[in-house]
Image 1: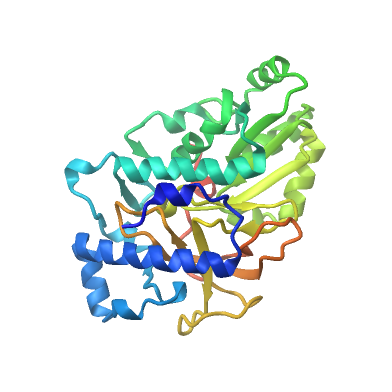
Image 2: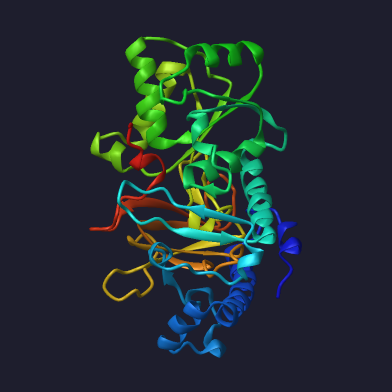
Length: 359
């Protein structure tokens, strides 16, 4: 099996797509063989598909499984005694949730990878951190939801971590102002899920007509856009509105999922999502899963070198997107860059910020 620690020494956006494909293909083939030997359910799937391992000569040929399978089956390639952490996706009431089983090695690699990717955008130094969520979301440390995992994962970049919302999801103006007073003139990091920020932070600040100064802030946000789309809020509206109420100028969306935690796709200053050397995106046509051309909308497939404790290294998502280009984004980062266009028709609403319901 390849040594992931050696790969971690590579800068996240330093390889051309050609060089990256060679690395990914070799490692993903090894992961496919590993999970075939160690996960009985995954073996059955590949046997039904009649996969020929000798034919896995390109990233696009690595077999994928639907991400929804993690809602329906407990897929694991490790012994029960080796399960260090179980992560779950967030879902609305009555929805099944994905269960992702991690051993210590996979969990550690997820955190190291997240650090490598995000710090290439924010810098290596820790910043005072304002979390636009409630502290109650991370209280169960053994069973991590996607929201809790996101907050805990990104918390490694922060110091003096402060929550902007109380346990009842009400904005805590006094806590925010005390935080800003403590760190006056400093660069600060903000993190939250897209809809939570819009609904419980932006809207409340606007309603209260209360101005706060976050002009020194860098906001990283993720999670679904579905409810914002329903409110006719575009990415441009989202950024402009936040700038109006709190002076935020630096706003980075990211795309990621609990089934491939650690390998996030960060939005650059030109509004493009980027695939790092540790993962990649492929788009496929809905009618036959054939490969899309550049600029053609299709179902997003994600591959990642991280999932060793469960067979999540090649997944067909329920999202649609477009690959915009590779190696030539104006930001200078190499590899593919893309945009997400939304959920495929009739797919369940994903969890995280989209499906929070005030109780």
